[in-house]
Length: 137
Image (tube, rainbow, N blue to C red; front, top):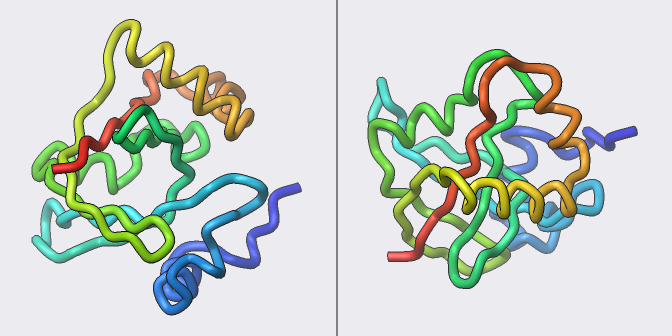
């Protein structure tokens, strides 16, 4: 059972005000805050997301629980791939890209070790769930 007591905007607020002291670990998984630029509004949008690392890069899964459409934060990246991530008190600028081929498969396996439900989410949707790599700039 997933503990949803810290979720969405409340998760972002608590993470920011405590530099991740509250919210960095959520249901046993590490969380970062991803800030994208809204594709329609041009306004910053921040989302708490499970993440992994691949060298210096941050790795995210655009699963949205296996929903039929990509999450809003991922659609924002298509228009503007320059982002900011916050991990605990550290803020890093980066550029997002979608992993393909062998890199995608390797990173998917790594992320499914962090959050095993990703494999289940993939069975709920017809779309290929994107694996996002954020390279620090």
